[in-house]
Image (cartoon, rainbow, N blue to C red; front, top):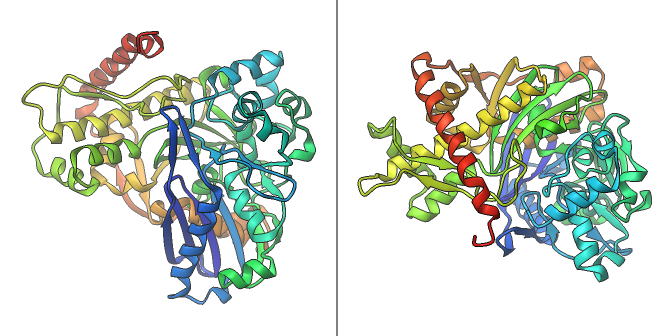
Length: 489
């Protein structure tokens, strides 16, 4: 068996696959998030290790973990885990959806004329580099203690193996890696006050980075097996649904909303706020649009109304509500593509005394779908090929939502088996590649697209309705965005 560990924003999922690549079992454990201020989002790395222990303990009650041959890691990207010379955590991890470092983004871009050429991306508060620059300016005593900066999944690697490694897909989201050369860039590090010795070694996601230490193996019920590079959550999700060739892509409805497409070369498009990163397989790259709040918008509405997400979805599906005057802008924590504005906030528009809860749910589902449409337009403007698109993530379990997105995009979408465990499955597949080799034949054999559960063809009869709604959605953003920057707000 092969073990994939996926450190998500809300929890850790452990996925076991068999020799044939099928999912044997999975287990998960939740992780708490702290919000020191409205724009600040942090987690405690020790909580990730505790979640790993909990998930493996649950799996171990049903499966023989001694049969695991290799381990792959996936995780949420961009988090700044700062370690001192003993490997101890200096401060809580500043998360990917933290918006405190907008000013530091401007400083970084102004520090190098060719910043975007080197990094391949526009500086955004979600990336790692501006977070570390924020620490240097606001917590100089913590910055002075930094011996290593690692990404969230790579902290788990350190706890498992005692080794400092990262891989290309995750490292590309730091703004310290040049995706074209697939190496750390000394000038990008310099303007952040760092040097190469602060960075982990680099490898491809399908290559071995060490073995589980004797101490970790005894603690977790594992053998001292190889641990491969793994991937950032989106690249791992791509591997999980067989997205390995140019033109293939997926839309992920997780905490964030991601539109991910493989490219045959590094194709930077920072002017479109499209992310251009390395894929986790050798000599492959990808482009990506990212919205910060997707399925999390539905979670927020459920908490606000005292319902569960399942109840909200069942209610709107059972009702006759298919159109509503209510619009929802899904910017709970700001936005990346296409706006790159951490100050944006969500809003309902068009409420009245007769508005039903089902209309609020429909407005949220539509608002996220319209945000995805904004991302698709940015990818098209960047010249991204869009051919074979799948849906993954927790939100993709809703057939109602999947069909709505197909209608908004007027694009055929596939929902595949294993889509809900995509990154964990992808990490397990990378572990398998770590032992079998990562040549094209092995990739084709080990990472095929899973069987299609349902194909959603767009309803052309809904095209005009959503075109009008999308235009109003965009107009609402344009007319209110400046208010979020006003002194009175």
